[in-house]
Length: 635
Image (tube, rainbow, N blue to C red; front, side):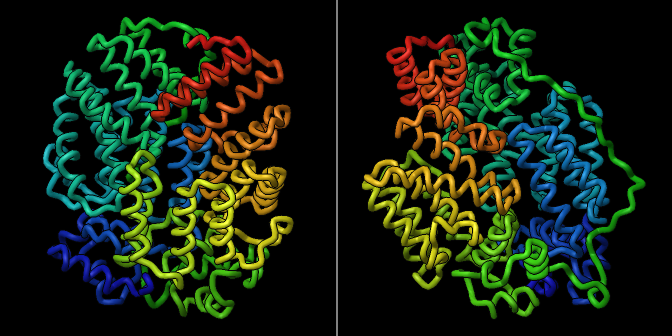
């Protein structure tokens, strides 16, 4: 159902949640505006629609649609900001936030609310903020949609994701302002609220993790180190297993801090150094904040290379405070006058701007006729096809909240569990895999492709893997030729398949094809220039696999030269992959007699291996460096 006919979806969600129009619209819009949308007399912007559906707890009632191109640009820009903040690339985040401000937040108060949230998060991460100013700005941002909220009693409200994130950050700033009781009250409410909320698995778990970090800090501030450790260590392990990179470093440091206060000094040293060196490896100022905190607030003894590693500078960014005079709307607009900026129009605009023909774009995905209907808004694509078309245009389509159905949600939840939990028993994976198989059929090409790829990862023989991966690729690229890659447009899944085919060739008699494939992938990226959100999905994997393949094939000089041909800032977005990259890179430096650089890279790889729960990699690297180059890690 198209979102420009959103009236039925909104009304159905409200009634199902048992809410009056007054309750449903509170802080978002007037009851009169909601009545107009439910009666089909007005339309609604994407972010307003999403917030209403969040409030109703309607997990599947979402789909990307905007009132104008600026609405899309603002939405997508704020997603970039989140990526940059998670990667501690604060200057990029600040620049992107300024671009959203220049567009006046697409004239929508909910984008403005999120913008204030992310600006305050930037201030906090920088280590240079005024906590009182941050607290006040966050509270003003929350009051945009919750003007009468009681911070001590909000657990019965139906909250949007942005409201939950605002409350989480407010509770953290309350702690820094020594309002310890308020912080504790808010954490308890958030921890009780989130488990029963109706958000998707990935969204919910990230919010729970962020809330847990604040509660752990609260417990440490009250001296309850034992309870804090009982919470932080399982959270840390879960973040490592599920590859939640953003909070992992902080959880590891907090775990080490609890161990230190409980006088388990060996374990404290393990976790604190893993957090410090990992943060330093990705050039995060969190490394500086950790070391400064240890020196100022604890008697922890800083030893080894930790004393001498260069300081990542702290940078102050001009604060942005709430402006009550900002003239922005609630995201409703007249249905008869304004034509919404739909997914079809976005696809058409991007395709024409990039000079991509319909034939190239839809090749292997759908017919030209179907694409034309999508672009003309006479047909709404399903979730998988929408994401694939956007990815071929260089946009990370999976960052959009979709109006899907129960099957879509079940597929992606099962796929996430099967693909991300690496330590699960074989029978658990097979159970998830079997459920996916029963859920889909071969005619659902994009779902079936993901199913084949997931299964390929669990095959032993490289030739079998290449065969299975090639079968999956040919579903959507039936005449694919690696030598002609730049004539194609590729989805994230297709690029992932090519990454893995390239990596598997290193173990075959055709090992020379490994470098060929990787070079062609990099050529494709150079020509098509996918957006940063899409590159972050696959380029870190390309980087570590290419580095690993070159090293295994004993192309040491080529391995050492690899950072010059890659955007290393993107490689560092996925810290697990970056750790493997450094594992091979440090040894290649040793083979080229660049021992000091090898030592630094090895320390960082060792730390990331500990951070991500791969101690066997850390031990192996330490042994290799000593046996091969007589380098002893000063860790």
